[in-house]
Every structure is written in C-alpha cells, then in structure tokens.
Image (cartoon, rainbow, N blue to C red; front, side, top):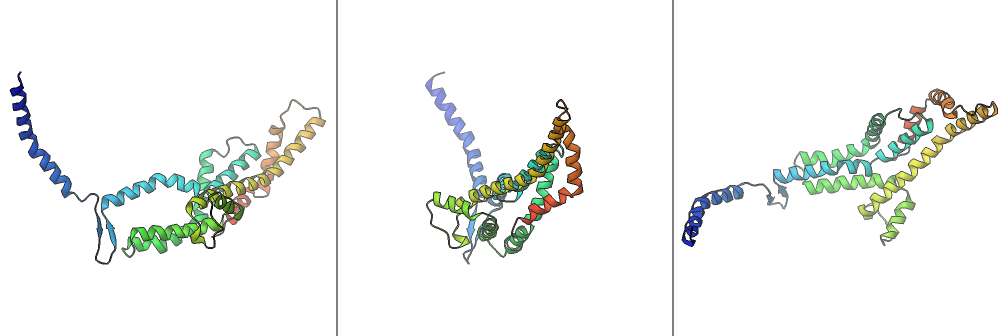
Length: 253
C-alpha cells in the first residue's frame, strides 16, 4: 500500500467521523451540566449537576465530620474505657457501643442541628436563601457550639502555634485552629472521665487480688473472681444511666 492509499483512507475517515464529532460536540454544549447563573438581583443559582456534586462531596466527608466536630469522639472513648475497666472483653460488642455513641451524639447535638435547620437549611430549601449563605450560617452556628465546648488552654495553644493573637469574638476564630483545638479538648476530657470510671473497678480488683493472695489461691485469676462483683456494683448503682447522663451533661449548647 503506497502513500496515496494512506491519504485516501485518512480523507475518507475524516469525512465519515466529522459529522459524528460535530453532533457530539453540539450535544455536550447543549447540556447545561455545569452552569452558574447570576440573577438580576445578584443571586447566584447553580445547576442540578453542581448541586449533586456538592451533595456527594458532603456525603464523602460526613464520617470525618461526625468523628471530628461532634460529641461522638468523647462518647465512644468513655464507653470503650468503661468496658475495659469492667473486664468484660467484647461485651458489649463494638457494634453496640457505636450504636449507643451515635444515638447519644444525636441527642447531644440535637439543639445545634435544630438551630441549623431552622435558620439555614429550611430557608434554603424554600428558596429564601442562597446555598453559600446557608452554608456560612450553618458553619457559624456549629462554630459557636465548638467554642463553647473547647477548653481555652487548647484554643490558646493552637492559636499561638498559628501565630494569631487572642481572639475577641467567636467569629474571629478560624476553623483551622478551632477543629484541632476541639478534638484535642475532647480527647483530654474523655480520658479524664475514663480515669474516674476506672478507679472503683481498680479498687475491686486490688481487694480481690489481696484476698486471693492471703488465701493462697495464687493460681486463680483475680479478674475471673472480680468480674461478678464489678457487674453487681455497676447494676446496683445504675451505672449505664449515670455514665450516659454524665457524658451528656458535660456539653453546653
């Protein structure tokens, strides 16, 4: 096949494919996939594709949001330490602890979520507020909750590392400082509560171990003997209600 044959094949291919390419380009240009329109009053509206993209992005970061800026971290750590202090191994199982932590988190965060819905989400769904304004208003409500439940020492530490002066208003606190300060404060508070929960069970273990040692039963595991007494003490004082109620009462809305 000589050079003239290649030229003829190329021309024939171009003639055949050119209409289909132009039709495809026309179809793509006719699809309002990524349109951003500005109305006469200056309000910006986004196409459905952009709204779906934003929704999928929010759903992607939702687990990190749940772990980092809600009460979930403190609750799950306290419940895990409590299970370890009781010595019940995998009882309650991890799925039950996570379920308890989730429902307790929704209970603690309910006033904040309701305020966000009433002031930002509901007006946006009714077309009374633009998406950006709704997001900014929701973020400001969440910022107030985080600041109220963040220790001043942690907030000052991260502000100093960021090179910022002490903040005068809640609106002046950037999220880059607030988020790590909040999660650090949550970890500190969770371990403090866990330490207080650990003490009575530790005393029971020490008493049982001393009794077994004095009786010469060194081959018998103290954990095995102390477990029924721990469960009895926990049930008598209504431990689950006290623990969950104490965690919920530590938050300010």
